[in-house]
Amino acid sequence: MKNLIKRYKFFIVTVIIMSIIFLIDFNVGKKALSIVGYSFKEMLLVIPPIFVLLGLLDVWVPRETMIKYMGEGSGIKGVALAIILGSAAAGPLYGAFPIAAVFMKKGVKFSNILIFIGAWSTTKIPMFLFELSSLGTKFAITRLLIDIPGIIIIAYILLRFVTKEEINELYKNAENL
Amino acid sequence: MDIFTASLWGITGAAFIAALVKDKQKTFNSIKMARGMMKNMIGEIVGILFLIGLILTFIPPEVIKNILGESNLFISTVISALVGSITLIPAFVAFPLVGSFVDAGASIVPAVAFLTTLTMVGIVTFPLEKQEFGLKFAAIRNALSFVFALIIALTMGVIM
Image 1 (cartoon, rainbow over the protein chains, first blue to last red):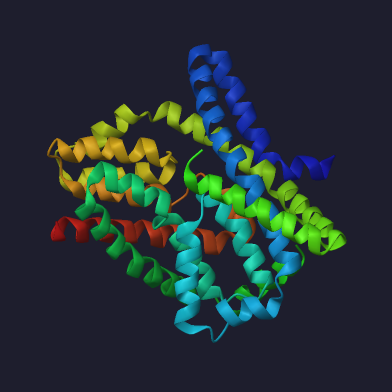
Image 2 (cartoon, chains in turn red, blue):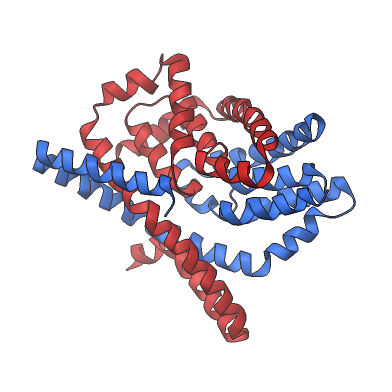
């Protein structure tokens, strides 16, 4: 019971806030809930396949293969793969975190994981298409060209802030998935 | 369902069937692993969805439009970046919103700042990021991304 509360405490808190808003102003609560409904649908569309793919990746793809393509010494190939995988993905940023965890378990280099998260957050192809149509080709392409070096620079600066021990700790936690 | 989500399901389905044909037991193990991971995260994810609903109720698109159009460029850029950090709006709402605004002749610097932090910085998804990567990492990544969003916005302003 105590574990259950601990695990779902964030969820429980948001539900309580939502209930209070309903009590104060029913219409505002209804509006909030309809937005939740929309995001919920978005989540149901992407989260189940992401987790099934992750499970398959974990069991079927050998660690050696992942290390070869995206691990230490994978060089520019690993960086490019991280950007492509992140950009081609569907779903909001929270979908990237479990994937990052499995990548760690599989021995993917930490900097490549950071680039993957960056690509997922900024250079996603579905988003790029929306940007093309609403803001024009020049705007979208210029932003993309600034974003790509941007996420690589962010990844390497971030790398300097995190110590070797902290990274090892993260990888060890990922082992227990 | 857009084509990317559809292909995500397609690829997942095909991979699952191929795996099932190859080795039933191994594939069932992978599903068990997927279920375990999902159980660990679903509470946080649903909590995030509720939080998104709450935030968007209090910061609706009209408010965002007002902020983007603030006459002081510096203030509007920083506030736009902040609003982008705490909201999580679907792309098909965000881009047309910003598009209509830029078309009307507004500066693109706050617009780019907003679009960039919208996806790069996640205050709402912070609990989940913290759970996967730890507090320090999540804090630094979000702070760095915020600063970079401002730099990217300024660069766009200079180039375009």
